[in-house]
Length: 212
Image (cartoon, rainbow, N blue to C red):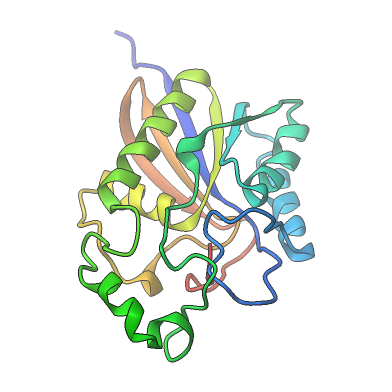
């Protein structure tokens, strides 16, 4: 009796971004990895060097493409692009949103905060989960029997993980287990998810980093 085909899809959060203004940059172009972020991408590539990667795909945003490049190069692969891996849309894009300063102190923005369960200020959590799941299954099919690497962003990765674990999608951002350059690895047997493994090949970081 066949045990099925085992495939792993690694969801990689991009590395640290050069963001001296401290804004939530979201989908804004021009935000690239910092020097530390480039080192994080290299550490991930080293950690995955012995893995059987046959497919590497990334969000279209620069920081994701840059994070994917060392791992793809180590396995002599091109970096494919999947729009479904992009950062979540957010109406506070380009603003400072730290508690106590920035956009959240301005009354004109308060209506955007009316429903944190959706959330009302951006792309609905359920839509994020569904598009990310589509990207994951496309990557799983492309790497069937081997491993795929999908480079995305903190909120989409964490939202998908909560969706797969059957948890409510609204959450406290401070409690996300999704550090910079971390791996959330989805283990499949055929098309069935059998395990979720989290690792931090580049070390732990504060999940409240803006514009992640």
